[in-house]
Length: 226
Ligand SMILES: C[S@@+](CC[C@H](N)C(=O)[O-])C[C@H]1O[C@@H](n2cnc3c(N)ncnc32)[C@H](O)[C@@H]1O
Image (cartoon, rainbow, N blue to C red; front, side):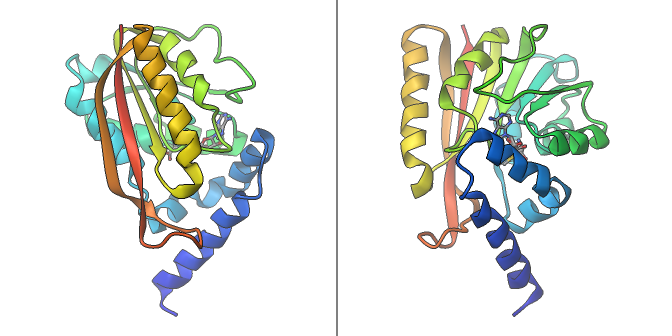
């Protein structure tokens, strides 16, 4: 077996072990254990979501990028902030439910503030609102962040600000994705936000489950707060 396929098999077994987690607490414990190797392992998976989301935000952002304040929700180790910084954004605040992932984000030196919050069970920190950009990447999926948390993300965005979200389109996540999109449309009908762009991406990341092969697809959603 080549070094590449050996690395892929290792990452695959790490991820398949996470499918056993059913509660948010179990999922966050999984991330606590994965934090040390997360960046290396998602590179093996060719995980493209942070760069796709950062480019989508930058393409539609009309203000001064260095001055914009960005809330990175479920920030993990900081991959989204890293991509956004490369595109000229400079002020990041992060939140995540995993202490070990937050420690890694802190080490990155990219964030002005980082807070722990188990989304779906705890509200976002009270003093936080009026962000220019709110982004959540890789965490809106079955067993992670409940889809209705997107209302809280819209609430903490300033009028005219952007909310960027991603989800996976693989078989395991289809029901969640349908509920997420229903909630997005409902919020548009309530005139809370306006859809700017929805992009389907074919090569989102390498597939790890037995039912899929090659790459799974994903989607990026960009909304503007009314
Ligand atoms: C796949 S990682 C994505 C991290 C980062 N956004 C990226 O794209 O690299 C998912 C992150 O969501 C966090 N997470 C999952 N469920 C959560 C929840 N209910 N509340 C807060 N964070 C959660 C995990 O701790 C983990 O850091």
